[in-house]
Image (cartoon, rainbow, N blue to C red; front, side, top):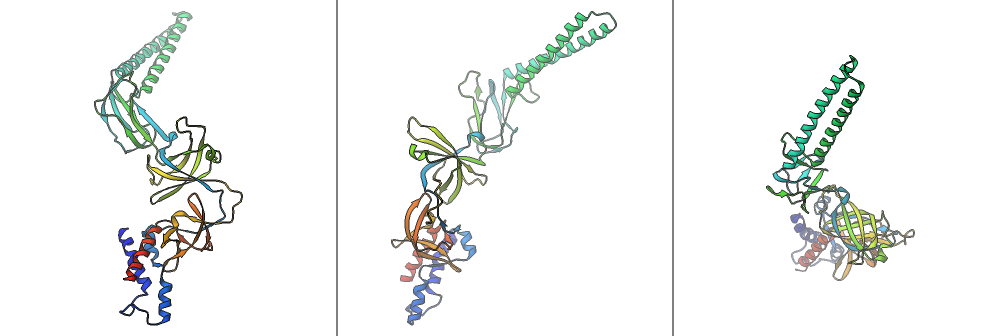
Length: 382
C-alpha cells in the first residue's frame, strides 16, 4: 500500500509533464503551453492502482434526507448476544481450556471445576437410582403376588406410590445436577461449557481460583457473538425526539465506513449526563469493528421528498490551495475539480457548483490524491 501511495506523485509528474519535453522545461510554443496547463490537476492511475490504494468511487446523490444528527459513539457487544459464564456452585478451577479472544462453539468446554458439592450431588443421584431400583423390584413382586392372591391390593398400591416417589426423587436429583453443570465420569468435577457460540471477550478465571457459594463475584468468562455489534450514542432530548427506530446511521472511523440502523431510543434521560441513550445495530460479520472503539455516527433523518440538492461524502472533499476540490474519475485517473460547497448534512455536504451529478468521484482515501497532487506540483516547479 505504501509503495502505491509513494508512486502517486511520480505518476502525476509524468502526467503533468506530458512525458519527454525539451531539456529547459519551457514550452516550445503556445499550443504546448496550453497542453501543459490542461494537464495540471491530473493524477494518472490505472484501475489496479486505484483498487490497491483503497480508493472508493461513488456518484453524487441528488435530493436528500432531512439532514443528519452527528455524535460520537461507542462500539459495544450486543446485549442480546452476550453471555456471562459464572461458577455454578462452590469449587476450585483445575483446568482452563480457552483463553481471551478465542472463538468457541456452543457446548464446548471452557473450564473444569473441582467441587465437594458436586460430589455430594453425584452421590444423591446414585442414591436415587438405587432407591428407584428397589422400589421397582418391590412393586413387581407385590403385583405378581397380588395376581396369585397372596398380597392385598392395599400393599400393591403402597408399593406403586413408593415407586412413583422414587422416580420423582431421581428426576429432581438429576435436574439439580444438570443445573450445576456437572458433567463427565468424575464424581467431583464440574465441566463449564459455552452457552453460545462466539468470541471470549473477557476472562477472569485463573487456575487454582476458588469460588465460594456466597461470593459476590463468580464470573469466569464473558462470551459475545461479534458478528453483530451495538453502536451506542448519547443524544440531546431535542435530537432524540427526531430519531425513530429503523433510522439509518452512518458509522465511520479512520479508513472504515458502514451503515447501522437504530433499534432503540431510550424513553428516559440519563440522570447524570441528562442525555438520551440510543442504540444502533451494526453488522460485523466481516470483523471490521472492535468492541470498545470510539467512532463517529451520523443518524440520517427522514426528509420531505428531498430538496433537490447535490450531495457528496465529506471524505471526498479536499482543500487545495485554499479551494474545495473533489477528484473526478477520468479515463486515465483523476482530475481535481473545484466545487462550491453549501451546508453539511451529517456525513455528506451539499455541492452548489462544479458538478453535474453524473461524475464518479473518489469518496475514500482522497487525501492520497491530494498528497500526490501537491508533490507533483512541487516537482514541476523545481
